[in-house]
Length: 404
Image 1 (cartoon, helix red, strand yellow):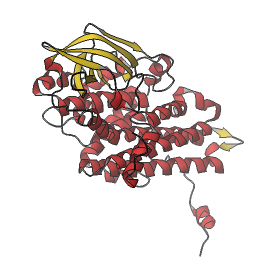
Image 2 (cartoon, rainbow, N blue to C red):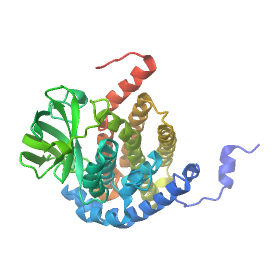
Image 3 (cartoon, rainbow, N blue to C red):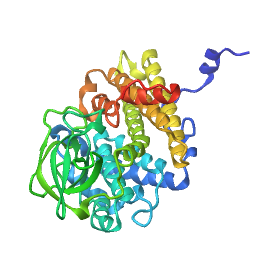
């Protein structure tokens, strides 16, 4: 019997760039519609996003030019069910975010905030008048908006939020603050606030032009650079009755349901980062030469490439399975939390490996891996930190709560 190294010697060396999705026939797991959407988004991202996005990353500015180019695609229709959208699935939404993150995780996060948080809240809890007034505009990117839950004093312990509303004639008076709110300086914001009369968390649609709304972009942020995260202050803002999300009953039947939905899809952004690292690392190591041969010809580099590839594929299978289970209504909060925690943790590892492989040039934004390294830290933290998600899963598998 031939030994493995003898067999390997008989295989003609190729310089092919292995597609991480084709290598285990992962495309075969997608439906024809999901495949078609992926092709459209990939083409758009490679033409309109990848060549331009790093200018916005360098300046930490919102990519208005790129976002405007998205409008004719009606891309955000794929995140909504009929009649306001094309009909959707967790996997289709995830594929869109994965392709966007191959160019920039910040751009993918903008799409996620607008759709998984803002638009899904309007779709799930808004009445028809609110959907006609706001959802049609946020879907078509006529309005850009955010989702206000986190506060300066309450991050992981979000249910203890202190932003509050008081019922008055014709509406409510809103006071308090929110922090780390993406798109918080744009057009509208879903605000989660505590009703002082009932002590329950309720939801409201707030227009940023209203008197008493003040947003400042948080400066010095070194990850997800294009996302405009804001510190927001509400001072005696009057919210008319028609802007209350009446079907929200409390924190559990409100923001918690939205987070369960988005947390299924956020790991797809991590998959896009992993794939971006793999593609840039493979291209770099097969073209750059040292000691008379391509870097990819060295054993250490090949081991790293294989580890990145395998981690992406294992993560893809886990995220895909979770998305299908969620579509069937079978994904539990523990499953969702454990997948989000594990995949984003592995994304940090993949980004570090890519950074190592590119050497000094690995700290240049055009080579992607340094963006991946910093952005992976945010993916690891937002939508529930690694620790909190792990404890949510731990509570489910043991029946014992280790935190609130």
